[in-house]
Length: 72
Image 1 (cartoon, rainbow, N blue to C red):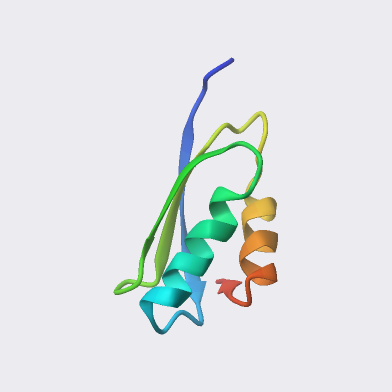
Image 2 (cartoon, rainbow, N blue to C red):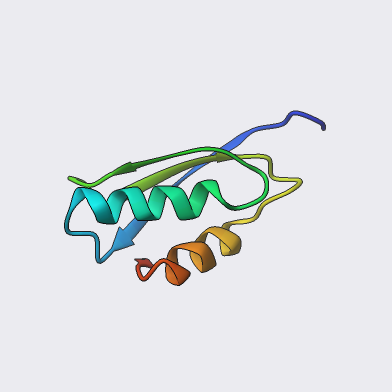
């Protein structure tokens, strides 16, 4: 269905500062189909809102890995 949105929360390992969080957020927002991404450094979580017809969780994992972090 066009315009469908799904939200997924990911646990991200390796973030230690705001720069890390911004790097992960930018990487996730760069994935085609991602509508929004917010990173919570304190809880080491990233919340991604996306169109499931365009993006899948593995793409988020890959983007985070390319940025130097890991989804656990």
